[in-house]
Image (cartoon, rainbow, N blue to C red):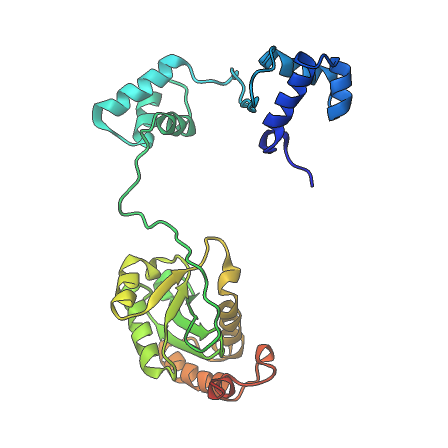
Length: 293
């Protein structure tokens, strides 16, 4: 298996052994080079690092260049640090002030300078992405995926909250005029009342409707809330497939109105959960799978 030179864990020991063969045993550099399968010039560089062959290990040196043609001028770096020290302003404001002073520097360069000097700050309100281990859906309720379907332009939009139990493929859906954390929690509460099994964990994407407040409400009621990975729609693949099914077999076939959706979606759910055979369940229905537990 090929391993990059700089990360090979035994390379420091190999360098030290090669240098000792030259310095202590009198081997020629060509002989050592043939022995280790490298160029003689490489052995020469190693010997210069430890001419007497006394180092137990010759560490790998950084490949970072000592100079770069696009390196920021020290005057600009000092000015960035000075502006930051004045009012502890963010990189975007510092960049604007530098441009107004006539300095030619990019925003990314300003951010790099702040990061290298340990001056980068992070918002305490930002929700960091955490991905606990995904449980195996061995029984109904262990993993329930939840999402939203947005239909139409914002001013005339109708929305549908959807959820699917990964084990049994038992589905839930509710039309809604609003998509927010309170509507999301209202949907979960209704789902809990209608569910024939106990729900233990909900998995959603990172939409604003599933943010911190929603997570706190879940935890307060004994529900775990897990986010899917960013830009990984396959993490919610079972529910994404159900969203396509309900759109093709229900929403696209009925008038687009809240009254119509409130009437037809429950009827479709009864058909989907109790009558429609599912290829992923060996042509069983979700209700038949539930009865086996």
